[in-house]
Length: 325
Image 1 (cartoon, rainbow, N blue to C red):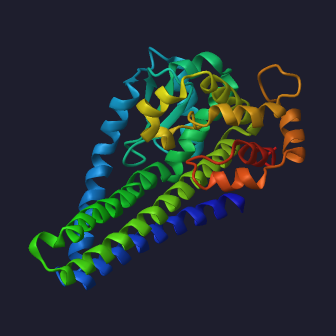
Image 2 (image 1 turned 180 degrees about the vertical axis):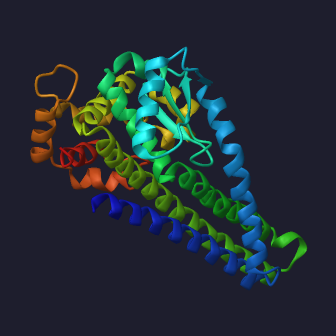
């Protein structure tokens, strides 16, 4: 029931975002009298399509992905094969990312063209069961098709910002020779577009957080070991906390939504999550997860800050994993 509700919430995000962009297109057509909402919708759809199809290549290049054969990584292939069978999806292409961050991600334009990648550093720090739980999380993204959805939807704020930028400068300078009266509608469109840019960004971030909860639930269902995913998240956050955050933000900030855990907020997340590691052995077992889920609390300030994050608050996330024990 909980998993079904997560899927419904993701669907509502999709509907809301397309309602936002369509409303903006109607505003443009109404104020300018040029074209129709259908024409603008086709233009917006074209931009979404371009992003949709070139997105995987951008991810591969940015993440320094190298695809590996079964002969190179037999155990990794074995785990992915078994999990894909359980999830009822085609086995995705498997890659290793040569970036320093211990993390994993899935991407692609469909279930059949999906890719799942882990960083070499992640393979070094996780146990087999922890790695399997992370792979279960990533394959759940593919199973739910949310990596396709979030890739397409992330273009909508970009469209809103492009419209804001174009109409703002046209209005500021009188629309290229038009009188000031003609410039006012352009400024109005620019202000509306900027407001919708802000709103659509928040919706995309909300959708990104929902997809992480959704994939966590999928991993728990596939592996029956939610504590292993909690432990893996803890290790990923610990491994990212020591990295230079400015460098990570500069090089991979735009890709953070693809990661299983957000490397940008790792230092703060580690302080909150370390309370789950009662015996300080660097991992979270089933007993520690159950106890943490019962006792841990998320402050109002943290809940507020979560609104602007691509990933759920790690305490909330691990608490929810405890409910799947």
